[in-house]
Length: 171
Image (cartoon, rainbow, N blue to C red; front, side, top):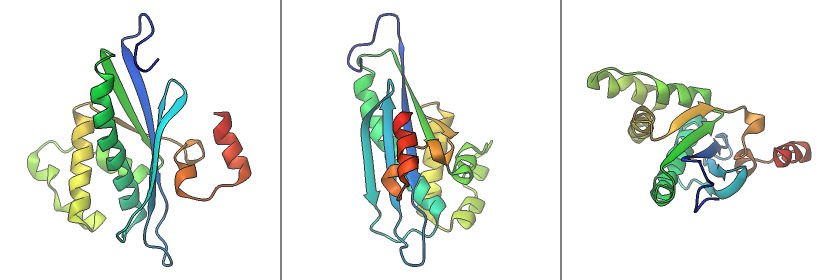
């Protein structure tokens, strides 16, 4: 189904869910992860412990989103050889990061606003926000919210109860 589209289908929708563990005093290194789902099946995933201190949970989530988008850029090139159109949907449970990515900045001065850097406390983080915003604006990726309990990437970034894992497995 991935290599050759079923008759009549021209667009492949790829669902990518991302998550990051929170930052604590005991562990300032976030665990980021993503899961790629195609036709109701998991086809790729990644979980990585950051090797540098992450100043906030939002930054951890943002880094996981950028990592997932980078991966999907490579995969999309392959999928475009078989499908006329590949639609990539990126889901996260971090409303604040999604809002920042979706924020409309009509001019270049606002696009490079100091406010983002001040809020996120990191210039490199601001560059990642701009990169994701550009992907969203150019419709290369659709960024949207998913409830935490429905986020498949949760199991890659933090401990879960047996009930929560069973719920995700039934989905």
